[in-house]
Length: 318
Figure 1 (cartoon, rainbow, N blue to C red):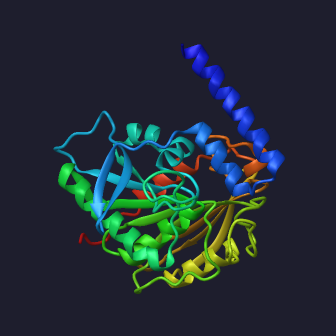
Figure 2: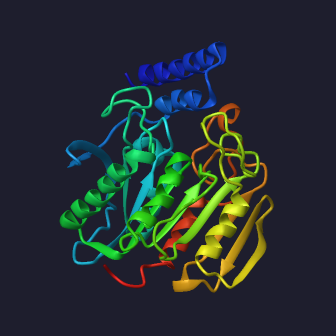
């Protein structure tokens, strides 16, 4: 039976890949087809927020001890996918086991191909942003009620469209989100962050990313141009009042680390540049190169992100 399912899974991949090539679907849709193959849309929790049932995928490490407050990582999926894809690509669960933190993967608002609660999801921003921010805030409330959560160590990260959503969270919830990270973040050309509270920031981006171009500009999957990532990082550093940097270090043959330090409230700004890297998660699950580009294993984005998160708790608890 298991062998039959394996054969069917492989056959499904071949059919969908061939279909994507033959009908010439956009890369983001092809990526969705691949996501359907790699991780089924599954969740294990739900909450009513803004009058609508929202779903999420929660991972609690086996070492969890209610007598000890655990950090919480909120990891946000790319557009046209779902929570289980983010779990599958990022490898956060393995790190959660090693370091004892809880991970939650929220599902976006839906409606990428139609339908709110099922099918590919997206984080649309705009007029939908308050509803999604409220969902994340309500989700934090629920998890804090059910588990022992360290309120000074709640972090947000995401990939692509999820990276953009992650960076909006500390702007909207400055007293809840301690630090933020993104992989292949689809950042808008302007990042208007409400309030003045500095945001500790770490980002990972490939120079050969065709969906969210490293140097910014038009994208085949978005109606508006994206930001130049090094310039965007410099903007974050200025906003954070960083007095040192940028300083650049070669941390692996194809990976450079650009750092801004001595920032207000210790809110450093870090950019890892992956030479030749695609719209992929460094050190994570390899996606089909013809869709997403190359995935490097020279660095683990999740590992480096967790180290950054751990060193950047909230200065004051809410």
